[in-house]
Length: 298
Image (cartoon, rainbow, N blue to C red; front, side, top):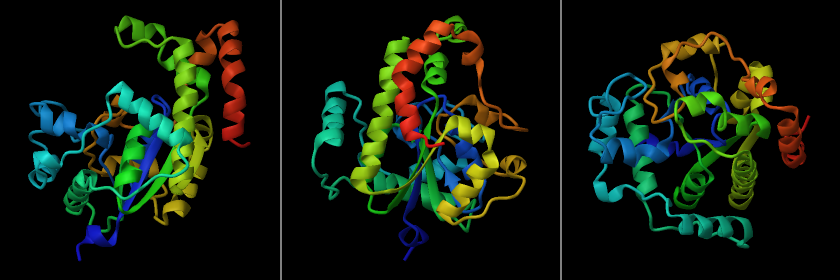
């Protein structure tokens, strides 16, 4: 029996964008027992459908990256699972998640198993003590597909950022200057509520092991977070976990550009506190604070 067959475990980081998930991904996968693939939902985009010119976290082009070349060599194009990008399909899945009385986990779609299995086996060359593959896709729809199709243990780490910081991160002067996608505050708040509700519902419906924290709690006490994850996954971390990131080789798909930088400390991004008007803080907090305080206990 292969190592993958004996250790069918996946850690999935769920939540909204700009919520510290990239640094959490790097920290957890600094363990010799965890290997991250970054945002696995982009496998088809970067490894199969592009010309391989995208940059892997190892700073090689994907087409030249030894890890992804090995993964791709063990997967046929027909095995790649399709993503529910169609808005009507997403609405259908959303209704199913929120309102269906039960889910049927038996599925004939083996594509997810084959991709993760290939990643696991390729990762053993880097980490012989490997127990977990880590996926930081965040997306609740992709989490649903994994929970429905994979036949092994999934552990979800759910990270929730204060909605005011989340909304600001998608609507600020820097994004406008760089001509990046801008979301209205109303859209961001509704999206924030919905995606976190979906994640919580999926965790409940599939009865998966999970750990929930806030971006703010993580930044204020990263040592407690690392201790909690160590207990949850039953793995060990180096005491100097930030410097240990530098000792590891990463091959992440997507993620914040932070994955290319050297990390010396963990700081909370509080630009929204300074830049948002008092009215916007009040307005955004009026709709989001009840959810935030219900989901994140003191």
